[in-house]
Image 1 (cartoon, rainbow, N blue to C red):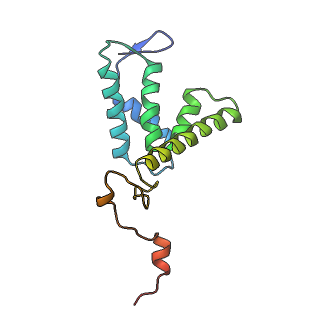
Image 2 (cartoon, rainbow, N blue to C red; image 1 turned 135 degrees about the vertical axis):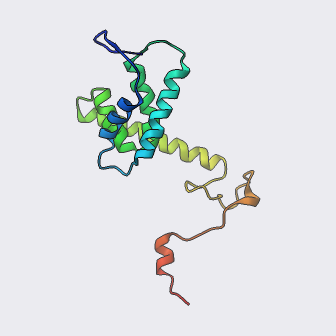
Length: 148
């Protein structure tokens, strides 16, 4: 059961999660399968708490993490409504948080001896150096290479 702010309780339904997230994903490259997986993850998180009733606020929090991983624009849309953004500053602060998360992820990759695309840093003594992927050019570089 989900406890609403009004005091009303209603059954938890995965469909309601999917409908709400679908609105945030409108026009984004997110498939129905991805929405279904996100809703399943949210349901698993809620049920793992083992409570008979969960506040609707916790359901919203359980949506934010998986949605952020799925699509950051959809995440911003959902977060802006869920958290009640009232100004451009609210968006700017959330975008700054997203950007710092990207930087943290890149730093973690560098520490493991990886570039942002997962390839090995040349000369790095990472654990998988012997199994590093071969270097490849970008698609644009490959298009410019004349055929022989």
